[in-house]
Image (cartoon, rainbow, N blue to C red; front, side, top):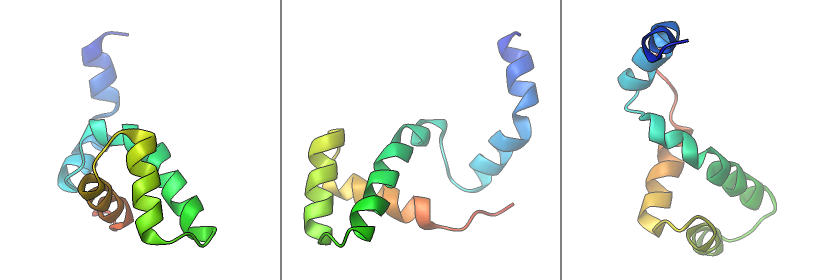
Length: 77
């Protein structure tokens, strides 16, 4: 399969992502968000969760806030 064929097959997904302000690079943070939801369910404080995720994934606390907000938004289809 060529890159063209691949992009052609996922074009509708790419369009939806673009309409929702998402980038393909955001996929690398799915595991981080899963850890976030697990820690929230376990009852940890938000300050601790941000610190833990910041250390675990090597990203800033502000970026964590942005990603959590983005992942919690409803999609426009």
